[in-house]
Amino acid sequence: MTHTLIIAEAGVNHDGSLEKALALLDAAADAGADIVKFQTFDAKAVAGSAAKKAAYQQRTTDVAETQLAMLQRLELPQAAHHTLIARAAERGIEFLSTPFDDASLGFLLSLKLPRIKIGSGDLTNAPLLHAAAKAGATLILSTGMATLSEVEEALGVLAHGYAQRNDPAGVASFRAAWREPAARAALTRHVSLLHCTTEYPCPIADVNLAAMATMRSAFQLPVGYSDHTDGFEVSVAAVALGATIIEKHLTLDRKAQGPDHAASLEPDDFKRMVSAIRNVEAALGDGVKTPRGSEVRNVPVARKSIVAARALKAGEIIGPADITTKRPGTGRSPIDYWSLIGTAAPRALEPDDPV
Image 1 (tube, rainbow, N blue to C red):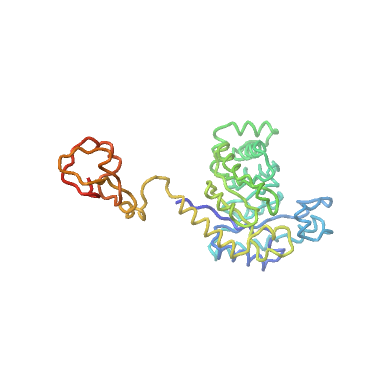
Image 2: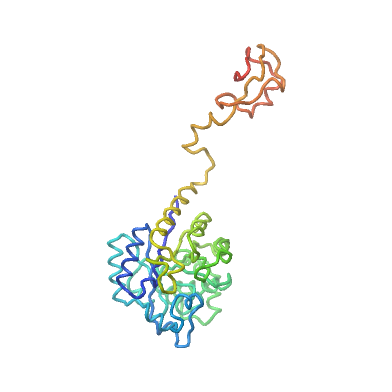
């Protein structure tokens, strides 16, 4: 049975509080998530003073607050990472984070994490992508806001980085790396893609879940889904469609003020999502079409056998009106109905006697 990697995206829902971050980590572990993810950034390295907040951020935070001020309020200090990693080890859940600037990437690489997540906003940030690949990091790459060609360009950057080439000369270097089988093979070993719609909450009509399969076919890489919709039905559907990773925001309170709380699940709903995903995994099975153990006993009850439709004498030639099919299915299969027409009754038969 497949095991979908479920990421509880704590993100910045800790509101800058280590205590809340630890509570989110515990909630993720209690809900059965495989991974808890945070965000690592230096606000001044991410946003300039003129950067505006997105509409969803304006709805959920102080309108007068700049994006830079908001990010500064939501920073997770480096020291907090060590505390969270220690708690994650105690709780048996993997710690993951997304870097938003070069220094933060370097810090996460120094922690020797099993993998690093690159957010949709940095899909076109070639220097960050290249540095991550050149370090040999295993990556999960979100693809919100991107066209298929932009995803291909990002993979070309990563392919060049994994190939440990000299500094790239430009876009042509990335395209050349993308065409090389050895560089593409490195992507297969290191990269997973997440389909995503970058809106919080995401309207159902904008999910476009079929694009996940498009990327899998185009790039031959593991694909998953980063879910920003209300509820978790789409995450469950994504697993049924072959997602290998599900990422979903987790919050302690959806009504709290902050950019991501409203598009998140509270712990009880997150736990229900995990349970639903595990049920779908079990239901997918092995793909072999054969009777399952629980239904074998119902075969004779539900299927039919060939029986006499009227009293027949031994040796009487059987015509179409002389036999029919009825339950139980313990006798001759109805597949033989036509082969019996024109043959002699093997013995005297009463109505409903098996032939």
